[in-house]
Amino acid sequence: MLFAVLFVSLHVIGLLVFKSQTASTFASYPFLLLAPSLAFASCCWRAGAEERESRSPWILLSAGMCLWTCGMVLSAWEDIFQHLPESAAWFSDFSFFLYGVPVLLAISSVSAKQRMPFFIWMDAAQALMTGFLAYVSIFSVLPFSDTPLAPVSASTLVLTYNAENFILAVAAMLRLLAQPRGRERRFYAVLCSFLWIYAIAAYVYNNWAATSDGHAVMDVLVDIPFIFLVTATMAPSSPRTEVEQEPHEQRLTLFIENVSPIFYTVALLALSMWVMRQHFYVGTVGIFTALVVYATRSTTLQGRYIRVQRELHDARDRLEQMALTDALTNTANRRRFDDALALEWNRAIRNRHPLALLLVDIDYFKLLNDRYGHPAGDRCLVSVALALQSALPRSTDLLARYGGEEFAAILPATDEAGACLVASTMQEAVRSLKIRNESSTGLYVTVSVGVAVFESPQADAAEIIEAADQALYRAKQRGRNRIEATVQRDFLRNGTR
Image (cartoon, rainbow, N blue to C red; front, top):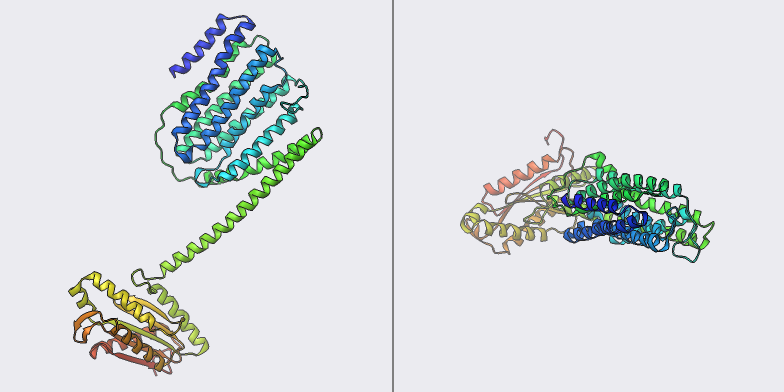
């Protein structure tokens, strides 16, 4: 703050000391050049100090300050050495006019999480072409050409710059309202404040300059926005985390981020068609650029949308698979078992096919856990699950972890003989593992199997679970390491034969 007051005070003192028009011009231009130069340097410093994902807006603002400084250098050359009238548009006006292009890019750029470098370069090229054609359309001449520069009325210059400044300030305010709290929001707060101060100061200065010859004292107004930008940029920032946006803020953010590229294309097409009347080839290049950028953007976004949709579909499938799979044994979990049993039960009713359910229990599993520890029990469960899965003869058969040390197998279109054969194969597969567990059934891990076969299902699927559970209970009661079966051939809804 002290620096800002000292800078403006020195400028005022210099203008008061040198009262003549020529002397005040020489005294004023060092301050007019130093203020934007300091703003450019401070923005470059801030861009280097920011994290990588938050650096892009500061770089764009630095580019805008650089263009404005170049315009002031050209203006000093034209005033001091060329003695050109201020009511005409010259080379400096082209630089002043283009200063808004990178600033508008900084305002309309998407958030760091959604930013695509390729689109930034396309928008930059499109914005530069738009600014170039806007200059040609307003001032009716190509900049830096051999064509003599035709003077433009003071009212046109004032209206042009005031409109540009007002549009930039309003756009920055909208973006600030839509930006969530965080490091990027601080940039838009600084930029919005700078642009409104600049718009007000420029409005007063431009109207004064257009109507008065002795306006050197008003040059102090030019310092104020740039000195403010230096002070705000160099001020230490407190870390702030992002917060959840309100629904209306999210809609505004999406609107700004999606409309800004279309605005560039529409503006470029309109300006190109307008300029074609006097500069045919320049207008043609502008139209071609707009069409190529729009087609490239649409194709890229469509490809990205398709890729994202495919990735989301794959992620959903993986999540669904994880939600239906037992984490330890990699078999189906209870939820998937319930869904599959209901599906196969209804299919068996429609097709009048038998349905078999096997409940498999590891014998004396608690004894194994107590003797060798839970890690050994987990390894046993994994090995038994693989052995049981290998015993299933068809891909349509489903093995699930029913709970604890129990597994369940659904065998569609399988009669009693087929179900008992699968159960016997399962027992043999588990015995071949030779997992140590001394018990009344032997030296190694064994399983008991309860088989339920409903040859003409007509009731609820819970009936077959109950029948298989009763069969498993009998297998345990009769000494374990055995197979017990229950067959229902004429099952009615009331459960009687």
